[in-house]
Amino acid sequence: MNASPYLKHENRLAEVIAAIQVMGKYRFYKLDFSKWADRISGDENEAKRWQNVFIEHPEFFRIDQTKKKASLVWRRNLPKDYNVDTRNEITKKDFLALSDDDKARISRRPLSNSDICMLIESAINLHARALQQKQDRRWWIPLTIGLVLGIIPFVIDKILEII
Image (cartoon, rainbow, N blue to C red; front, side, top):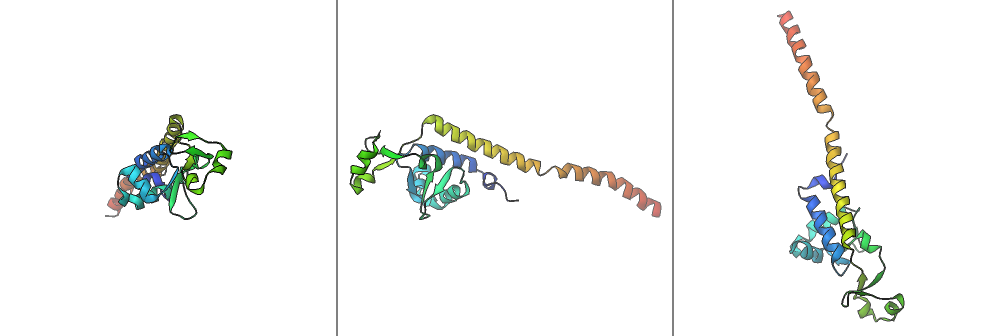
């Protein structure tokens, strides 16, 4: 069974939480990997690292059809009615009346603090569950040690009888 992506990397939970916070609040809901890397960690050269985080956690992130941009699932399902310049919602009628250049300035609204808290709580719960499953898979270790330690005196006794 493959290890949970939460357990593959030491700081994975922190990475997921950081990405949720930034992607949940940034005015644009979808960016390419290098722009997200710059927003999240302050280094565009970390694009590959963040791409891996997004790909390994489809419970929170989606990659677009071009495989070049990522978004937060929750925001992706909101309507495109948020003007990133005025920070106001617009009507569908107003959106349709915009030029193509102006439509590029329309995004999906940022998440509320409570929405972000809920996503972070979910990430923490998934991480805790992954840790618990890892521990649960080790149930046989104490049993095996007990059996081996119980058999050793018996084997030594039989060897001494033969000698």
